[in-house]
Image (cartoon, rainbow, N blue to C red):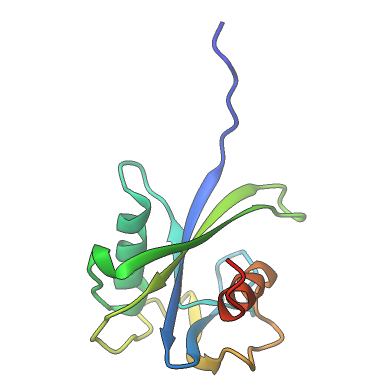
Amino acid sequence: MAEDRFKVRVAVLAIIQMDNKVLLQKRINTGYMDGFYDLGAAGHLESGESLKMAMQREIKEELGVIVKLENINFVSIVHKKDVESGLEYMYVYFKVKNFTDKPSIMEPNKNAALQWFDLNDLPANLISDRQTVLNNLTNDSF
């Protein structure tokens, strides 16, 4: 008899920093936390991708920036069950370094704004688990 194993959705999220600032996007028309700020790039893991490959793809799709895999470094994992939808996710956070292109809004139908925020003065409408991870990163709590 085959075991019924737990299945979970996986999303990757990019922490893109410059000095003491982090790049955030404002979500629209996504069906999840629209009107809230999210990290610079985020998206779902697709079949056949490694986590880093998914992050690299999402950064290119959403920001038009090409980042080498070796410049995408694991930071944290958050397991979350969304209260409204009941969906469970594993959010995998990566810190991105050594990018040369200027990030741009490549999906204006999903991204209302792209803005650098001081890590000590983040917007009140930042998605809560993103806020927690950024706080932990800033305070070296990992």
